[in-house]
Length: 398
Image (tube, rainbow, N blue to C red; front, top):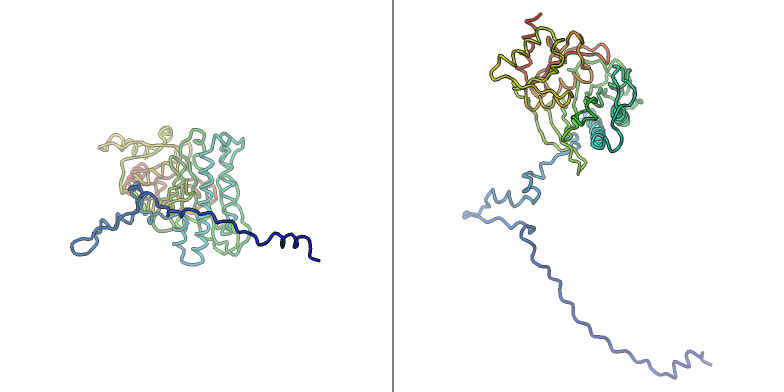
């Protein structure tokens, strides 16, 4: 009565076990000695007194990257960490968010500049801005990037852009406590020939939190709480001051981060360079013409002329090397050429915080009370002693 499968198994008898196959014991894996260049640093030798020599301790703590580039990895500070470390309260925390938003916009624009021809961003847009200047395609892109970034930060109440005739109102926000003025792309006539261009911005505090008031944009430059510019050239630099010292950051494209490379920039008290468009010399007044003649023929040695035609690039050189940058009033532009609110004020604020000076030829630029958002002004900025010399020549001619 057993099932067939069981009857067959019983008739076959017990199952014979197969002999186990012998296997060789595996040898432990031994790596070859590491190459000497890649080996971990040896422990520093001990001095006779039992202490570790300071030089050996420092060298043993460095890696190959540090040895090759002569930098300390611990010294690499990004814009983000720098800004966060400056935040002391709710106001400055909101300011740090706003500045980081600007930093992101500058990275985006720098990428567009680098891909200008490849991405078909070169050339004219076929439109004009409020000043009647022909706009380039990248002008419009930069304006859109800056405006959206600032608006999305939720920290602005009012914005002023060179590219728009009226002020730009931001959506109401309980964190909106700042006003931002900016030239999204300075020197745009130089875009297609790959000359350095830049972005300029200045930040004021709104009179009332979360309230959009156009009058908040018409504050004198001395009331700024922060200002900066980005330079898109052989490197992308972001220069910034938050009311204290001036700091310079360089964009590391491999990291996608601005790294602090120029801490506490100080402009020399005097310089050997003057920067001005001498193509306009026949329109200058007698005082400024006498000054230029003085630095070219009377001073020994004579000063060197350097003029790029992009305010950000010319001011950046002046900030680092000293001397002066001038765009004076003349018979062709009696009120000056550069815009007071978003070109002269931020650059003058930076220059003064670095120990330099900025004047319209008769008074401190930052003391001027603006009357409208696109107001123009003459400007002379740079080394403090050199700016005083310009004021003396202009004063004698009056």
